[in-house]
Length: 367
Image (cartoon, rainbow, N blue to C red; front, top):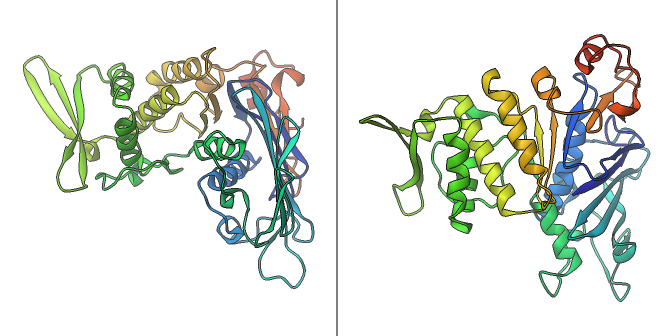
């Protein structure tokens, strides 16, 4: 589980600390421009590190520093298998340099140093000492002896983070290969679902049941082979004696997002340590479906035996009403010249009778 995120000098995030504690589901509430998406962008940096990306140029092709004259600091605390992992990365853009460079990078587990780096000088388990290129993040480059090594456990957790801002019109209609990672806009969802099902065929039931609760006439779905590697995702619907087949490409935007949601649910059932960040899940979901959709998602991620976590953003009153004062964080900025601030709703006083009214009346803007 994600426990804490600290960011300094990244766009509007200045000395920014997000303490999630032990919450399995969280709503980030705030107006446009307050920094909610920027928080997701920071988590995406950690996700890409887990996926093996190392060059700082891939993370910061344009300057993301709030102030180029000061270092950028990114820090994440997570709990995996009952142990606390802390990873810290400091990046600077020295004068006369054409690209950013690593100033500091370190990973600790329960306070014990596992990997420590100052500039290029690096140590592993306080024993092995070597030099790394200061324009490349070191964590993905380290070779470890087993899958149970803390570095591998942490990298795997980062790699499996799911970050979503779906754009259904971008979704592929044809799967050409399996994909172990889901892209942020969801465009490769059928490649990813294909990989999930090849990894664990029993997840078919999870996906089917989720869809059946929303499309009562669905009978089956399958990947139809149309070449050596190419597959089409075909759905069969039945109403009495009438049967119809639809290609995934023929689905509406809302139906495509429902399939994406079903695949994420399957991944959550398959991996008890997944953290999912979903930017405005109410987009493309009908109002009739929305309450049940959010309730079911929260229930799944809050299962007592699971370390999975759901973090969403939304302005929709139906989504907001599915969360409580203890797991709604209010994100605000005084102006575009001011840094992002965040505060737990239960620590904010407002005079309106409901949080919806307080939000509409601007009582949550100046925390």
